[in-house]
Amino acid sequence: MLKGTFPVEKLKAVQTPFYYYDIELLKKTLGVVKAEADRYGYHIHYAVKANANPRILSVIAENGLGADCVSGGEILASLKAGFPASKIVFAGVGKADWEINLGLDEAISCFNVESAAELEVIDSLAAAKGRVAPVALRINPEVDAHTHAKITTGMKENKFGINLSLLPGILERLAQMDNVRLIGIHFHIGSQITDLSSFQNLAIRVNEIQEDLHAHGYAVEHVNFGGGLGIDYYHPNHLPVPAFDTYFSVIHRLLNVRPGQQIHFEPGRSIVGQCGSLISKALYVKEGETKKFVILDAGFTELIRPAMYDAYHRIENITSDEEVETYEVAGPICESSDVFGREVELNRVHRGDLLALRSAGAYGEIMASQYNCRRLPGSCFSDTI
Ligand code: LLP
Image (cartoon, rainbow, N blue to C red; front, side):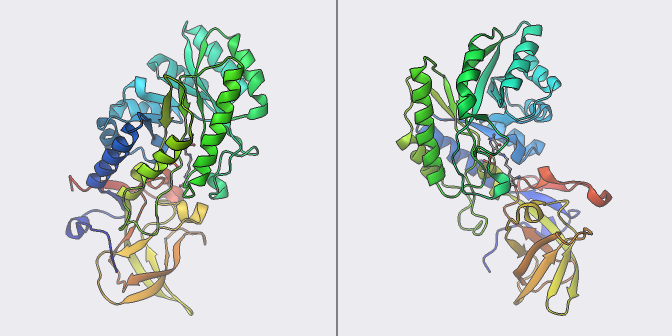
C-alpha cells in the first residue's frame, strides 16, 4: 500500500488524537498558488474558515496571502497571525453589529455584503463612526457547482448572496448612501468543486453581469470569484498540490477583465486540505458477525466530514506493514453516524496502532467539537515535532 510519509516514531510520543500538519507541503502549495496567480496578476485571500490553527495562519500570512474571514473571531485570529488589515475581507450572511464595528475600527479592506438589509446596517454603523465602508456585493449567480448539496451556495434557493433580480434596486439604494462605497462584486458557488466547467459557467455569468452593470453606469474595481477548488481525497499521495494552473487558466481564458480591475480568489480547502492528517490510535479491534471493526480514539468530534457530508477520507495504518484486511473504521462517539469508512483496506490493525485520516487539513480541526465532553484535538507540525 502506497502511504504518506510520516515521522512515525515521533508521532508515537504525541497524545492522540491530534492533527499532524506537513508544513513543507503547505509551503510548497503556497508557492505554487502564488506563482500561478502571479501569472495573471490575481489576488489570493485564504479562506480562514478552512483552518484557523494559529501556526497554519501565520505560515500563510508570512507567504503574503490575504485573509477571507466570516466572523469577528476570524478577523481577530487573522490580525494576530500577522495578516495586515488591508488584506482582510469580511464575508458572511449574518454579520453581527460588533463584527461590523470591528471591521470598521480595524479598517479592513472590504465587506462582502449579502443583502439590502445588511447594507443599511453597515451604512449606519459606518456613519456613526464617520467612516466610509468599502463594500462588495455578493451576487448569487445561479450557477450550479455540481457538488454535495450541503456545500453548494450559488443557486437561487440558497441563503447566500443577492439574487440577480434584486440587484438593480440595491444598486439604486447604494448610490444614495454616504457611508458605503461600492468597490467590488463577489461570487462563491460552492466547495469541493472538481468539475471545472462550473467555474467556466461562473466566468461567463460574471461577464454578463459586468456588461449589465456597465450598461447602467457602474464600474467595480474588484471581482471576487470566491473559493471552491476541490482536492483529490482519493489520491493524496499522488497529487498533493491541486491544479491551480488549470483553475486560473480556465478563468483567465473566459473572463473579460476591465481596465484596472483586480481579480480576487478565496481558496480554503485547496490551500490546506492535503497538508493535514488526523492521527488516531486504534483502541480496539472488534469482531462483528459479518465484519471487523476498528474502534479509534477519534470520532466525529475530531473530524465531522464523513458523518456530515458522507465525505471520503483515505485511511492508512502508519504503524503496520502486515497483510491487508478489510475493516469498518469507527469512532467512540455514541451515535451510529460515527463511522469514518465502511470497507476500508488497512494493513492488519492491532490495539495501539496509529491510523492517519488523510486530507484532513481543511474543515477538520476547525470543525471539532466537545460533544460527549471530549477534549479538543491538539496539533503538531512536521518542522517542529
Ligand atoms: N468563500 C466563501 C464565501 C465561502 O463560503 C467558502 C467556503 C470559501 C470561500 C472557501 O471555499 P473552499 O475553497 O474551501 O472550497 N465544511 C465543508 C465546506 C464548507 C465551505 C463553506 N464555504 C466541508 O468540510 O466540506
